[in-house]
Structures are given as structure tokens and as C-alpha cells.
Length: 136
Image (cartoon, rainbow, N blue to C red):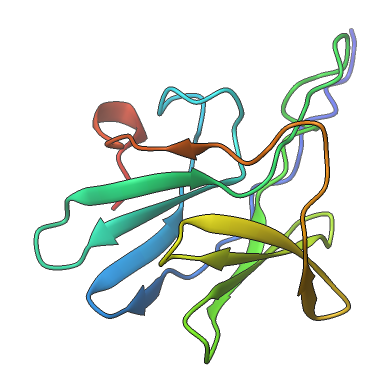
């Protein structure tokens, strides 16, 4: 019998509320209709509970042939910054600055934001996270 190398549970990351908007990690991106489990942020109107927008904070490509769940990377922490941005750190220690006003992401290096590089630009996904993927 092959032993599964299943991952430990994703870290519990507190939601952040700023200006009547609650920011939280999408708990299961695949069930919400996205192409990866973790790495998505959803903004929710606090009063109505209506999802406003969803943003892919980082890309997490899976390696074919390896068990999928051990490759999933979730948020480790999220905090509001004085300048109105959110600082998100993932389980691999990579940090990202999310600007809710522009719905953009930059990588953070040694506590400072820098331009994000890579072959794929960040994708802004306007989607209601409903049904199985609904966050509460």
C-alpha cells in the first residue's frame, strides 16, 4: 500500500476588514471554479455579504505526477497596511502587496514592494464566489 503524502491543513488566516470591505482567502479555489486551490483573495461587502471581486495573488503551478494537495500553497498571513494595501504572506514565505484600490499585486522583497516579474501577468477575475466556493 502506498502511503499518501497529504499536506497538513491550510493555516487559519484571519479576515481583514477595511472601510466596509472584508478581505479573505478563497478557501478552495478549485471548488470556486478557479485553476488552483490557493492564492486567491476575495473582497466581500460587509453589510450585504456580496462578493465584490476576486484577485489571483500568486500563481501556483502543479507538477504533473506529484500528489496535488501537497503542492497547494495557501495564505499564511494577511494584514492591512497604513497605506491601504494588504500584505499577504504565503506558506512558502513569499510576500505580496495587494492594492485594493487598483486591484493589483506586487511582490514584496525584504518588506518592500517591487514590480512583479514572470511570464504570466496577474489576472483579475471578477467572479462571485458562490455555491460550494462561497466564503463566509
